[in-house]
Length: 308
Length: 308
Image (cartoon, rainbow over all chains, first blue to last red; front, side, top):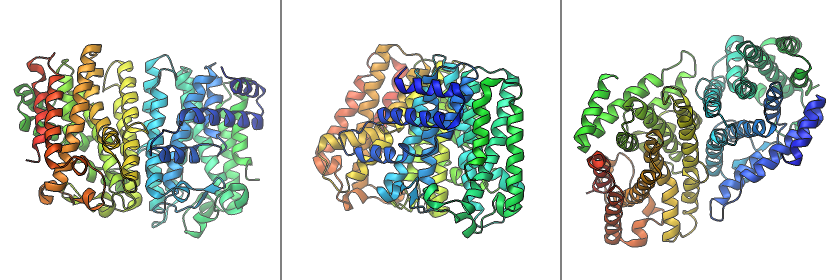
């Protein structure tokens, strides 16, 4: 294990959130640094664009979820971090494509110009495509797990979480929401697919790697489901109440576009109460676990507190 | 096995190319039909766009290569066809993204409007993204192979063939070739990545599924490498000499854009001679196999004859 892994281990054990997030961010960055080596030909521009989007950005909440879920079962940290890298590859590819002019047309992301601004649209399309492929290259590699059945299960679960019945399907609903009025059940479905599916995979990966029992898997699925929805409600609240400088991107866009969100459908107060309820539910799902699940509990609380 | 598989089996055995291509096309279409069921919500548009691009189009040469390579080792046809579907998912996603206004800006593909014309750009981006995920969902499923190590190896090989050191890297070189003059070695490298890597995977998949020996794998790798280059030279010849109606897309674009191609660098006659040489080499790589490799030999000859 490298020295930054020791920091992760130490900070995961203390179950305090901020140092754990910082340690994971450092580990993920150093892994992207090694993984994304710049070729000595014109493909350099592609890999530079991938690095621009993948490195030094974001809270790395998804990899932390995977590490925390893996920690329940004593999974090797290095292997858990590899899965975390794969999840970030998919998350970052979705952001690059989502920011494109034909999608959300965003110029800023995490306080930096988006990939199609810093490079160009064609490079942004390809950088997203290549990051999606890289996710499976990382997962399917023997270094991720000695058991090929676990590697194949991880690939299958990630593919389901990001295809038409997962993230890409959610993005499509999001596009439709610009022209149609979505009610609360369809808005919940949209968010469950668009952001919930990958959050669920981040937790499910721990269950797969840790060979969780059916009961344990069900608990973790319940936790991830409620966390994902609460996280999205918090995001909607942030979108109307947040600080653009802190967020590092344009805010209020959903509201300006007249899109249905949890907040527009429920109002600020009910939305906030709903998020609190969901987080309590998420934490209740972990009742069968002991102190080893404290980090998962801390992540749940953080999910709704980041905007306050 | 379904009835169209029987047709594939019969026509593979006869080692004649046209009926084999037709039978594979029928099988691939009926599998896409089942795989791409249209959801009863606004995600319907996404899956319709995926169907628009994936069904009833193309020669299905890559799946036929996989079937032919699998046939050397007696691999189950249904399993080989599943890998063929995964390859087509990746091939089709790359065409959808390649046709986008920010890339090649093509309005026609296989005689139909391209996805961003028939739908819109955002849907085209998402349809490509979702097809890439679907490829791994198909490969990693137990139905593709009972042995998880083979499923994981297929995912790994496909990811390598389509990331920065494969297809996406080749696309990036292709973008660079619009602004820089590429010499013959860099043009060969471009094509080896852009189209060669996926053709190589189509053949390699047979070796993986068939648990080929090292010697057999090396032969097949040599065959696929030479076939891929010859195929691209034939494509360049078709681009300047072909019939747009037969091709179902705009031709002469590379020439108009002043891009280096094998033909612009070598001239028509030398390019044609080089393609012939490569095909002879490709077939020579198969010398260690008997009549069971006749279909692979026929595909190689077809690769350079389709434009004459």
